[in-house]
Amino acid sequence: MFRIFQVVIAANILNQLFGSVQGGLQRLDLMHVLGTGGIIMYNAFAAVLLLKGDGLRGLVHAYVLASIILTIANYILVRKLLPSIKLNPFEFSKSEARKMFGYSLRLYFTQAAVAVHNQVEKFLLATFVSVAAVGWYDIASDVALKIRGVLILILTPVTAAASELDALGDEMRLQELYYRAHKYLAVAGIPTVFYGAAVSSRFVELWLGPNMKMIAWPLSVLLAVNFFNLASGPGFSILTGRGNLTPGIQSAILGVASNIVLSTVLIYKFGFAGAVMGTAGALILGAGFYIIVFHRITHYSLFRVVREAYLKPILCSAISLAAVRAVHPFSGLSWFGLVGMGAAFGSLFMLGILLSAFFDAYDWNRIERLLPIMRYARRTSSVA
Image (cartoon, rainbow, N blue to C red; front, top):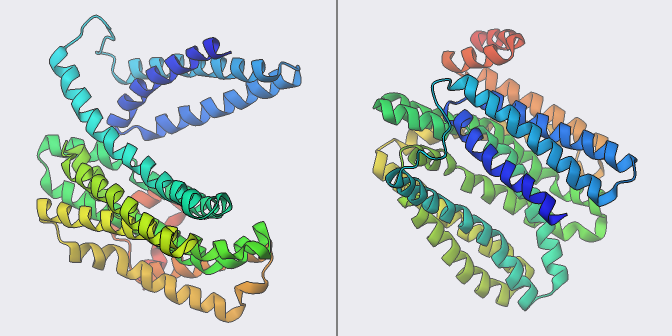
């Protein structure tokens, strides 16, 4: 089974190459369509083969079939996007390979630091407290990281766009890209953090039972600090697109080192609570350092980021949350109640954003291109 699975590994390596072409050309629509198609194909093949009784062998064969088809589709798409480019593995340039490897190694270092970040406190909890505490922490951390993973999709196009604008020498549009990335991150992330933190206690109670309510406050804290850490993402994407990975490496080293020191001391002294405090402190320290260094390098206005991107979403989130809590407390809600309250909160938040004229003409043109029905919402904003 392992030998057969080598086909999947080889196909995934090729698909990384083809996917980088689509991402570099900012055709993320095609990249996501193919990715979704691959997932659907795998599940369809797996269902058929499992129903036939093939078991584990069927799952591996499903992976192989889906990977081969996806690789062929990716290759055809790349030939369509870049008809003048001929893929020839014998045309090898040592100098270009050295540049690519050096860049990738530095980028990989920052990604590896994130992996260490996510495991240090678990190891220390198991050492100083108990394995059960690791499980409690992992539940809260996993939920917070999954929400972060959804929000980080907003920043996916920024690196490719920054690389193109930097190559063109268009500093004005590059600066505007930075502010708008923060703007869209804030309007999606801040209400998510507010509502998630507010309902965390009831969410955990419904999900895991009242005996596990101690997970609620770590979940709230990790939601907030992960979003703050994600606020360094627009700057990281901009500098990565410009080929400057040094601040990212420095921030990663600072974050990992501070996490090890803080988590060791705080877990030893406070146990489970120390893991949350140590991780929160390290994430805030690493992100804060990167944001400060980024603004020193670029001389972009940090005040403008706070004023244009974060101020209105924070105010609208706070007012909307207070309004829905005044109608009904979260403590007695069912699953349907949490969803309903979330819909009411989201509606009030969007109404507040529209009335505050948060989106400008450029934003509305992009929104209407994706969702033509939003032209009616634009009229509401214009009236306000």
